Length: 194
Image 1 (cartoon, rainbow, N blue to C red):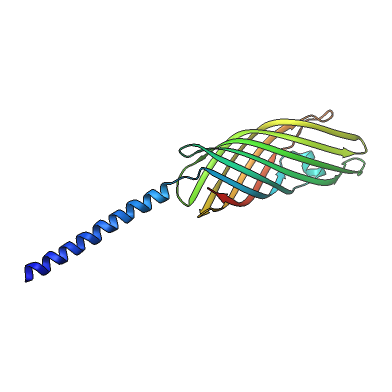
Image 2 (cartoon, one colour; image 1 turned 90 degrees about the horizontal axis):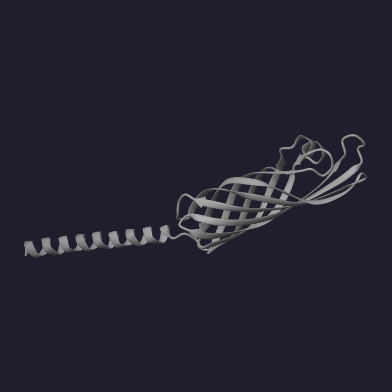
């Protein structure tokens, strides 16, 4: 009788151990799955690096959206667009001036981990459609440059949130002086992860 009890006890412990191993393997497989597409609405604070831009317009709010598509493994293609509009005063005459910028960034983003928390870094090209209007005149043109970023995405089922620091540099020459329309953007985003 004692041998039968020991046999059943060992069998139950072995079955529990196998079930735990299967559950662990299943959890690893679920966590290892990388999302194929991420869609975010983004809100951020833009801090220009150019001294003239900073003096005339200062920092401000930037709104935008992003689509991130998985290429292979942890490598993603990110396309982000935004909108920045600010009123300011010219340095010499103190006349009113307005600046509207539509930044578009195309980046390669690498997610270092898989699972529900996904830190990443990225780099790519930046394009800016900008329009400045004041008593001197109106400038409506395009600028080109580069962008780098680092951030973290967290997901729960199909919902995702994202926090990012991004630096861009887009040198333009609207009149005689060169101006950098880029700078640091600290942003948060919410959206869907599939």
